[in-house]
Length: 114
Length: 114
DNA sequence: TGTATATTTAATAATATACTTAATTAAGGA
DNA sequence: TCCTTAATTAAGTATATTATTAAATATACA
Image (cartoon, rainbow over all chains, first blue to last red; front, side, top):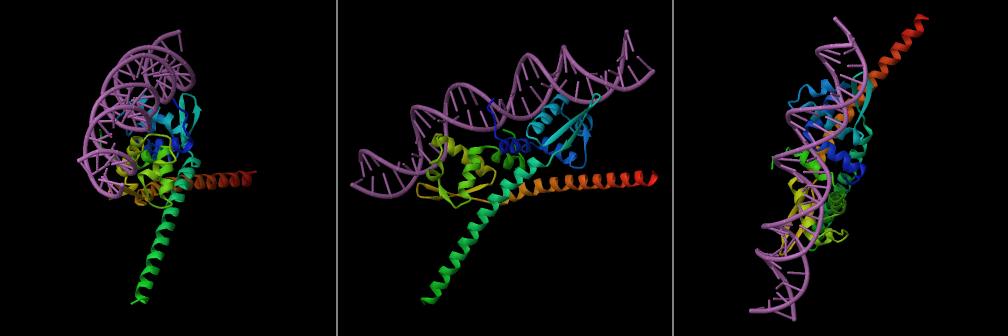
């Protein structure tokens, strides 16, 4: 079981619709495992494993209260994921803009030479 | 091979450091498969498979030129990923703010009653 | 104490992922 | 035509992921 870097853990955790649904639920406020599991058809252990994946990625936090675990979302990993995506989007868009500038100036030269 | 929704494909594609490195390279401009493969120690077929994953997620685009394939990044899936992340971050932060407001007003009441 | 509820752990199985080497396809150029 | 280069496909393998059922653990509460 190879150790994974945090971005890989975060994106992998987000790559499953069940886990994204869990985060959607938690983005409205903390909930117990039971409350989280309720809308899904899968077994309780399956939910428990999904929660473990989310926790390992730092996306959720559990606090124990008697036999109940209350889960809440954490935004730091979302910040990290977002930062990566935004950086690449921005750099690519800069490239595209530069390319457009280049094409424009090419056309201008073309026009001047005729 | 179950059909996956697009967000799952995108996040899964981003969940691998080799593929993120490929996108980092491509965010600086288009490149051929050879150029992309160069910094990596893994075999050419492994790169080819990573490119297939990125392509299936819509993150890259290939244009064929004789035996060379030129690859470039596409930002639509990055937009989609970013939108999901931002939405959840925002909603969770709103919750937190509301909670803080609530606590503040509780404290205020507490102070008034003493 | 005994029982119900909440949740996790363990064992297992099916499927998916990420790599490998060998073979194949396709084009350029001596 | 033959050889080289670029890239993909095919086949095989190790490991990871996602689910299952059965059992274990922990707490509340009659």
